[in-house]
Image (cartoon, rainbow, N blue to C red):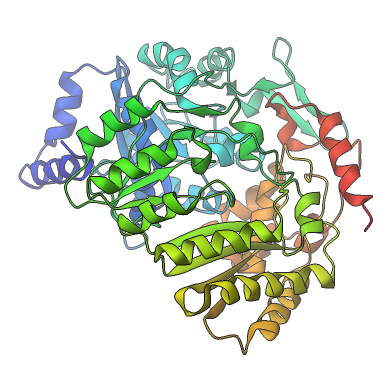
Length: 544
């Protein structure tokens, strides 16, 4: 049964009963020791196309002794209820948040309140549900949520759940909370903030018997079962596609990318396994979205696209690295119905691009555009970042120059969409020491690029909010003192910043000291700080 069909059936059962719903009755008869609700702190259409959320929900529900429902943000409803049975969060033993994006942290407190759960972990009474969190945004820096979340699951679900599942199946002790959390903290990959004190000068100070750093758990190989989205998941960049994970990790080593540090080693699903899951799960006429950190690096991606196109399926990809595909692959994508390709130069000039670890020449992007246009694909979107280290006026003008060249070689056959995104320094990367550029700098770059391209037909420019990205930067590298911000997150960004009372420009715009302890270093991702700093030094000391 597809996930939407399951939810629909559960709701019908609930609406026809005055007492316990069908789903809850079934859960009770199963004798589950741990009743869990997996929460995605954003709207349903976003949640249902997030592979991490939908995959973890499925894995949790398979654990012996554990039953799992799900909940999403519903701004029009004053309560946070599970999708399956309509139960408030307070009726579950475990409330598990799936955090993919830092800005979603702002929705956590409001959802807990609306679900009848005390947001502040230390104030949660005996008998209250436990609140845990996972996902890449929580894993790379759990500290902003440390006063809300009882425990963090740091790592990939396939590596964590075999260790966590048997513990949960015994049933959470909702009375002896401190004892149960202490036992939980002994499990690999689990971080329980209440047993650590954060000192800005000395870093994390754990209670006796606990490690100073908690290792991020990874799988050594691709999961034996391919993560896919549920049927009829909703809309996203893929539309109503069957989203299939083709691999994890990226070996390219871009200096700004945290995914390349977290998801190691690089792992691709075997071709046969991908075909099996696509053939089994695909609904006729539905698009196939191939997703991963480096989809176009899959050694058999060309063969897979050709087969799917030959069979009449529509195919889209989350990303294409310039230089990875040739005319045949773009022709196959066009045959499948693809109308837009996304490329990410990241920086306008070859100098800055190389400094960021993305060593792709302008000529490669120009040649790529020619192939895309020749295949009959109508649009190419170019992603650039503003506020990168050492960025100059010449680098900004190079953005417009590259867009103009790409439009020129493709002529009227190809529309060029230029997307400008503020650079947000992320933990565990070589650029984690770098300041976030002031929003005025981002605004100046957007104005300049638009000015340079205003007379160019067939080229359009869009830009993400520099102020919103600044809040993301604050959350990405923040600590426990951000609780007042999250406590008022449901009131909107401006109100939350006022409640926090800090000066955001001072927090996000300052360079970090070489030996400064970082809140996120409680998480051991297997990358040496010294090596990262050496890379950062090479960036800031670079000259033309």
